[in-house]
Length: 282
Ligand code: ATR
Image (cartoon, rainbow, N blue to C red; front, side, top):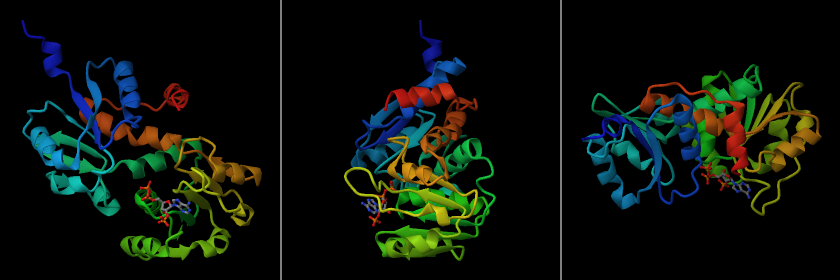
């Protein structure tokens, strides 16, 4: 007798190379259990050489997956392997979520939504200002800038160690975004409503420069998308100076919501219980 449950149980993946560090399985398995869905979410190590074959099997249905998450180093490479890349992923220049829709393979990037949803939850009103500073000009920075533009910020300063990378991003996102060298950090921070760190500055052996956050607008918010540790050197510095802060763990949790909904058909909720589960694993 065939097992009908296993035939219809939706399956999802996270692919990367290597894949060992991903926290996504813990998040999605928690939601599967909460929703009583007999589905699965598994990490799969897929090398760049195997990426095309993996996507072919996904598209023709032979792999049995409904979709999944895509992480380093495949976030850009999959653009040429899916049927449709949505506007958000196109603007960010990377995708992290794919799903099958009536035989078509779709791709989006949920980091921008995740960033905004985290702050909506933990720092309501965070998007009421105009001026934002984004420290860093890597992949994560692109998702943050996308979120800030979509939430109405009109004056976004990217400050980065390597100025050319900041310039390239500013050109990519248009007239509301400007590029600055580290030497300009103090000037950029002065009068800003929001400060977002997207670098590992202050961690992994690097010193964080002393930043005077007290020159920001009253009611300004400092946030970090790094979440290990939850209180990063930049958040600790801002707190000490009396600024409101928000940690980045919620971005990881909220960016997972749209994917789960697409693969498993249920919109999951980010709860304190889930947050504690992930913290306990750090
Ligand atoms: P991600 O995709 O996570 O954003 P990334 O593309 O490697 O990662 O970008 C890392 C960002 O952190 C960059 O802005 C990097 O600055 P450079 O463009 O000059 O490399 C920044 N960064 C990392 N370590 C840093 C350090 N010790 N001091 C200053 N900036 C640092």
